[in-house]
Length: 544
Image 1 (tube, helix red, strand yellow):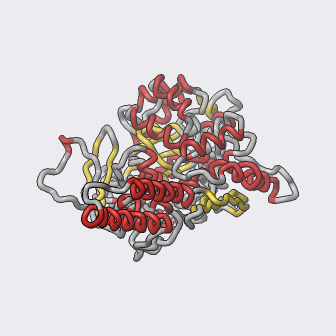
Image 2 (cartoon, one colour):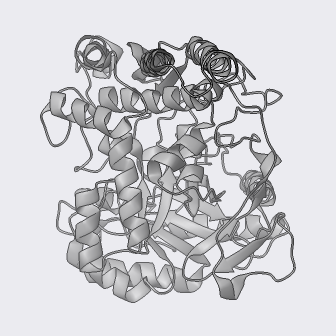
Image 3 (tube, one colour):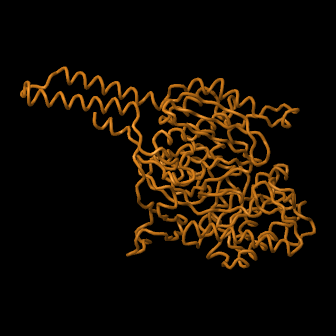
């Protein structure tokens, strides 16, 4: 009874440090827990961070109420409070204690009344039932909102009977893999040019939500499995992955709120690993492909502060490099408009873009390679499609650009591998994403054999956050990292399954945004809660 009563209190904030796991051979002897970083050629680099960098929280505690997000969903800023369930339990405990004392010391010292035991048991049962009822799902409501591109998307609120709640807004991609879960659109040409999501919203409000009422939000796996069963397809093509994911993420936020812990801590509990890590940011500073109206074929050019001593410094480094790039582009007469993901979108070729980034790193006062590396998202499935399925065509490049493969030329798989190998030899590239077509498994095997020991090879369109496709890649020895986007698969449970599978196989994990983003910061908590190496972000997103 005492435990039941005390469990109803919201415990206040505590202090402590978040620690990074570092292999024994790499640990710094004699250093106290503070900001420091040790690189690992095999595993990437991870940061330690003092607890104040995030909200100070105990596992059963609340987010520090002084934090600006203390009252947001997933973070309980209410301080110490006693619930109805706790009051019942506390009263029962006091009654039993008083009656026991009277029986033992005054009336019948040798006997404790069976009635007292029965009454106390009954009160405990009532309290336990109340605890379950208090946090069960009371309502699920969806609405249509706009993303960063001005396109409609789904937003979901999940409210619990104890007053806790969670909200999630689903992002959307422009360059999508053919094996991604289905993003349900209305296809009504006269409304939002066919991009409306009214049907997905109706599916949440009419089919998914009513079936979840009364369920425990802490049972994330069961709730996600139920929604998949209601959909009845492998790719969530019936109710829509955007509908299902909105509910799935909102349930997780509501559960974190009910537990009185930050969202990243709740995700760590679901993931089964209490180790919290701050990942290395990968900042998208130059856009091409389908993310920009320019002549650059590759979709994203990112910079990675591999030599930064901590996350805060790393973020400063990439920000200063971004602004240095702006100045260089302006001085060279290029426009400094931005693409869908916040990176600059000048008219130039792929290698010219790399040259400008190299100059920007130096202009910002850093050393290319040892301090800041370069990461590419080639989105090669788009090049393959432009080549008519016969090869990889650099379809946007300026034919007069001396750096480029001519747009009319189509590269075979082996030629594309050789081209990427050449780029890696000429520039400090630390990561290549989607270097080949999403169906070119043999080509990826060759690419991994060529570059897999030199840098990170990330499967995005190839794996689409799908545990089954990732398992195939691991078995074939394809790539050495996976890009994780929850809306590619459609539930938090499947997302975490993919992350666990990758980590168990020694693959790197990159938690990624989409080009159509929202104000929802769920993926930041996902990156910390799963202890991932990299966090891929657009240049307009503020972290922590």
